[in-house]
Image (cartoon, rainbow, N blue to C red; front, side):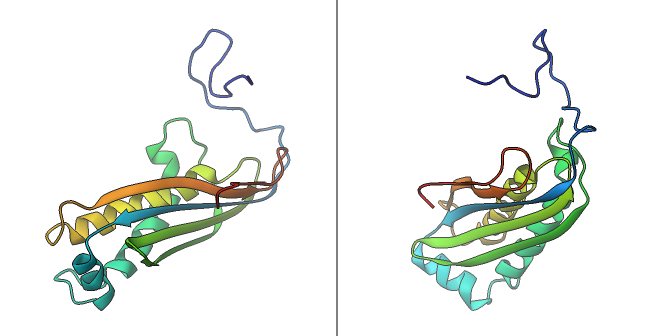
Amino acid sequence: MSRLTHMDDQGRARMVDVSDKPATVREAVAAGLVRMAPETLALALSGGGKKGDVRAVAEIAGVMAAKKTADLIPLCHPLALSKVVVEVSEATEGLAVTARVKTTGPTGVEMEALTAVSVACLTLYDMLKAADKAMTIEGVRLVSKTGGASGAWRRDDG
């Protein structure tokens, strides 16, 4: 098993030193799902909710969250992001959320993509909870990443 990068030799938490790593183009894609009742999904898709277009608001919330990841995750490096795209789309049992984050730098953007998806899902829940408190947020996961010394990685299960 490989050593945890955020722990020093004495087991204390530390920020990883990336000062000697080359800046490369890095991209990460994450996804998640907000499962909801069919009636709630229809309401969300109609844009007729009391809070307006829930998908558009969730997409903006996800972009904002990606930009604030280092403020939320204690040992995460602040990054200059070059691209953040968050998409909320209809899925069979709810709303699917996908985030694609890109930068050129010495460290990856997996945490930014995962944070974008998580906050977009939470925003959907917040905006639709009056209609359906039984919604669940499921399957938040890294789908793929490219760049850096470890190269490309993609989930086998999509």
